[in-house]
Length: 303
Image (cartoon, rainbow, N blue to C red):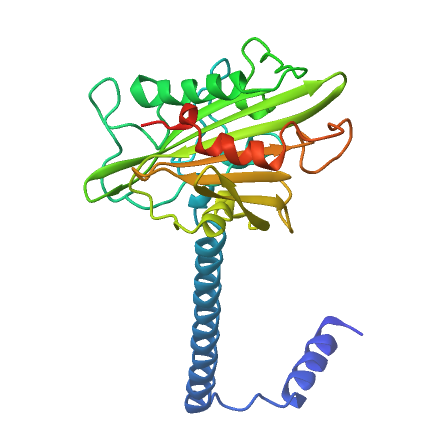
């Protein structure tokens, strides 16, 4: 095939091809509008889903991130310095005998004035008259330990989080009719040989709304309840929980409301750890009548 024949063959093929149909602008416009509508719908659904996820996430954060005030995570419940220890742990961090969280009442007003003349940073007094009362309570607790028992010393620079054998604290509770209500707490290990138990004393100053009936009052100690009996000391009725129920942080405790409204709790346990009976005392340091008499004594009648 020569060059002229090739050109003729190509022209023949081109004329045999069927031309495409003319462009329908109306159909193309309708198709474009449908695509745009589908895209808008997709973006709207995605936006709704994102909004739902955002709301769900906010709700979850609001639920799980709430403070635990009773635990004092806001700082109000931090433990103060002990007689020979340091403070800063939460009430549930004092070893295996967690303290009850301070009440949140009265937090709308400033904390009590500290030794520097400014409001305290939280409930715990770390210096001044109130702190000194907590130290005094621990001293009185150690002084009442029966013969044959010893109270181990705290290690140098031991923190409260390490569960020291000696511990004290002074916490502001609330204001009642303009009067500050304070709670003083002291804990001490008591050892005999290689076995160790624990004693505790807690004093709340006048103004508290705790009940007056002996057993109703005694069952309020750290909210532990227990099986209570009334013991007569002289002419006075004292409530003594002789057996715990579900809460076994202590084995026995007594309570007394003084005529001026001061409330004293005295507690004892065979074990320094309520979660374990290993190396605990074989018997409690005090009898039930002795425990009742300790609650009514003037040594724990603090201001």
